[in-house]
Amino acid sequence: MSAYPVPELQIPEPVPDNVAILVASGDLRLSANQQCWPAQKDMEERIAAAFAGEGITVQRGHAYDPAEGHGFISSQRMGMDIFKNIHPDAKLIVAEAVWQYSHHVLAGLRDHRGPILTIANWSGQWPGLVGQLNLNGSLTKMGVNYSALWSVDFTDDYFLNGIREWLKTGTITHDASHVHDVNLSNLPAPEAELGRALAQQLKAEKAIIGVFDEGCMGMYNAIIDDELLNPTGIYKERLSQSALVAAMRLVSDDEARKVRGWLDDRGMRFNFGTDEATDLTEAQVHEQCKMYIAAVRIADDFGCSAIGIQYQQGLKDMVPASDLVEGLLNNPDRPPVYHAKTGEELYAGQALPHFNEVDEGAAVDELVTNRIWTAMGLEPSTTLHDLRWGEHYTGGGVDDFVWVFLISGAAPASHFIGGYAGATSERQPPMYFRLGGGTLNGVSKPGEIIWSRVYVMDNRLHADLGRATVVELPREETERRWQLTSPQWPIMHAVLHGVNRDQMMARHKANHLNVAYAPSADMADKALAAKAAMLGEMGIQVYYCGG
Image 1 (cartoon, rainbow, N blue to C red):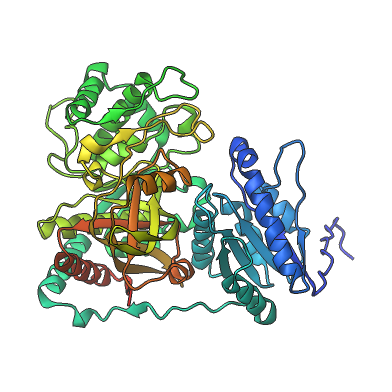
Image 2: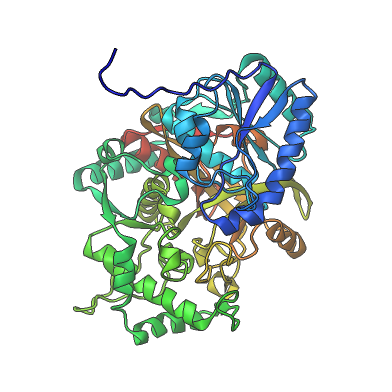
């Protein structure tokens, strides 16, 4: 017998075979959890009904909190405490109708032994699809086995057959026939030579990505460990958002007004109001102009080739949102910024790629894209987008599934119909951003794009590449899709080549994907080949996703 008090671990009760436990990861922000709860509740009721039809009772692993006004797991500690009471062999459902912070549940999921099923509602509203994809990417990075499903109303055959397979085998097999290993030796010689040479240059000379506070909104999948990143030639400069705020204070009002004047001269419109709590105001945009200048100066100080601002927790309580800043940075055609002492223009004529929400997979992608596109004489503006949602559309020469790619404002105006003159700035929703701040909003122009994602799997960097066409939809359809998602944010209507909805959802390992335009289909194919060659030479496993 020990002479010391030894803690007794409380072992949860085993869960009957006809019961599945459901958990729901939520936001860290109370306002978001409260506003989004009705959609989550509705989805959970539909999921329970579907499982009941298969003889399975769905039990929540945590109760609705009447004091909080929602039933989400709202912190990492809360998630740990909840999973202490869930038997590790239970059938486990993680149901998401909302954006969620994956780290709220990762500790419990890492140790769970039973089958795990992530489920999202096919809706662009809050959005559960984006939350599910982030969670799936995080589980992939951790090496945890899971299955995934999605549905509009949870009565379709795809969903019902999926849950039957999961209940019978503990896993779901999706069609991955669109995924092909890229044989680097078969790439066209000119593009392969360019890609290899640029990768060798990067490894020899190295590059720095500036990370303004790592790990935004629980996005574990968006953090690449140095041991995986550094062999590619890319290193991190770990910066602080507090330093960004401090640098903003050193930017003069006159400098900020010149940035704003440059945008006004280009025809960009700001939808201003007078209420700081709900409207976009002149004062908010003035602060964003200061942030833009401060960010470029800090990037120059540290020799960064790209930067990422976390911008959510912490920064949102001090200054307006950074989205307008991010969209400007991603465009070589942007307001000039000068060194505070020497007067030299910084990054003159260049984009300073910004990886939204400090997504380091996007950082690698944007740096590679910037170098390939620049070397090929192509316009190098690039951005990431959320895979927000989509529907089939027929009309105006389009008869296909059209994705809504949407991001909070980091898309460059060069991607929009009309450029800056076609762009507006809208206030970020008060639910997320108490101090406001404007987006860089617009409709992406029709054309050929390359989409891509760099992610961690099996303790190695991988990259999925594919082709897509951006289509122009009637204004009323664009407005409808905006209203079903976030009308303040820039939108892209994309048709993927050779990848259907369910293949994309099953394969994609992140909430984000990167996009870049090419002037023709032929040049897009060549740019994709050069990008594949560069990524492969950097030691990244490359796949082509398409028919």
